Image (cartoon, rainbow, N blue to C red; front, top):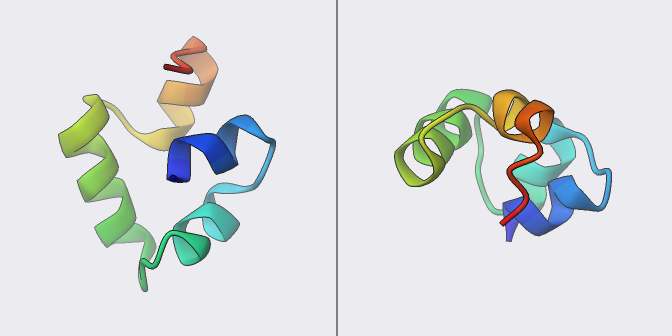
Length: 49
């Protein structure tokens, strides 16, 4: 869900709240676990899977 929001141009902050996370640290930790990098790095690398 969060990846789709980020691909649409939504900010990381908006995406994390819209995905049900309460804190950026929890969102980043889960994103790292699933994707292997932070949301910012994922976007910069163009890893839009």
